[in-house]
Amino acid sequence: MYTETYQLTLADLKNNKSGKQTEVLVNDHGDHYELKTVIDKTEFTAQADDLFSAFKSFRDKLLEEGYGIKCNAARINALQSGMMRDLDVVYLVEPGKRAELKDVHGFWDYCEMDEFVDTEEQDSFCKKWLDSPKK
Image (tube, rainbow, N blue to C red; front, side):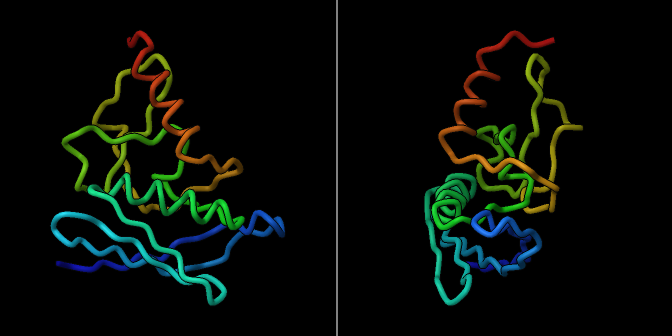
């Protein structure tokens, strides 16, 4: 087991404020990942077999409480290939274009965001991208 810590920037969607900071602990238990943070004395946790799935569950829990995560993995166009499942990188894809090495970005890297999507919306975008012809 190992633990890594990341500093994330959140948007407080209920109060229309940005810039709230939180520390996220990522525990790799070997057979699953667990993510944890505490925001305003409330603990949020999520776990899954791979990092991206754990992140999606974690992101959805924060969204339910009015917090959007400002990082690449939270973007609507973020996805991972099967070989990336235990890495902290994502592809940021564009409709009609193949994913290339230049499209790989740091999972936890900060990005400015105005729209915060949940897993259903992200998965829907991913499915449309996978089904679309690529150039």
